[in-house]
Length: 289
Image 1 (spheres, rainbow, N blue to C red):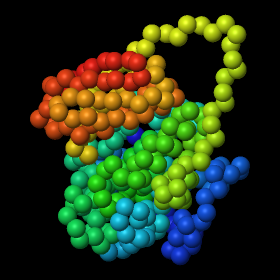
Image 2 (image 1 turned 180 degrees about the vertical axis):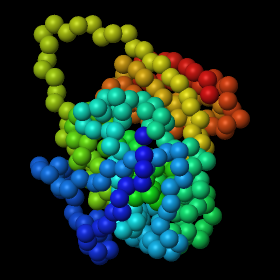
Image 3 (image 1 turned 135 degrees about the vertical axis):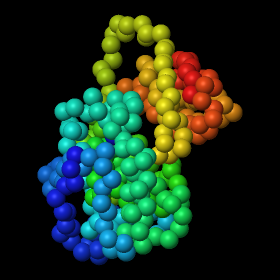
């Protein structure tokens, strides 16, 4: 979901950033896209990127609702993702796996980033988080967009990321607005929920056509970063709950407006080859891990 960008600076102090993050949420006010854009990045996925000096970064807050230091991790964007091509990128099932750096790259960066933030807990106590997530067009391997987020995944921020992605792909929210909301307001959104405009309702058709037969297809891919499977579902069942079962596990998630879903399936890598079954709406399909 490149070379290292020019050094980024934060125009406001730490206190200013806290104030912005804590400001009461006004749902996606008109003109939000006129705010300054986050910087683009072309940092390479094939090179371990240098991190800030040890102890030079300081998270804002603690625990699952903490924020990265805006001087070290202000967020950065993938220049390859624009509003015009979201159908070919962030709204296409499985796209983020094609742009995610290899674990051999991010593991070294994560250790250096933990030192930069002065954290002392074991490496597995942190998620190496894309502050602007890949599914919202975040930079894939820029130091300005990655930091050691406390807690394992999935976490409260992951839910906000998925809901914003769904809103962008359903054309209820612009990509630029979603990117700014995740950087400035995700804690508020996680605690109080999103207030998004609903898609326009279609006009009733006096002679509705018969609904096509329900169908779905599925594939599974091992995710080295999160030690689980991504089960990608494609169906003609939009906005339906998709349930995945197999290998003694069950997981699920809603499909988006196009009938796609990425279900985090916490089976073991040793379950490779096991059949998993998918139920989404009235459609059924299966695949193997």
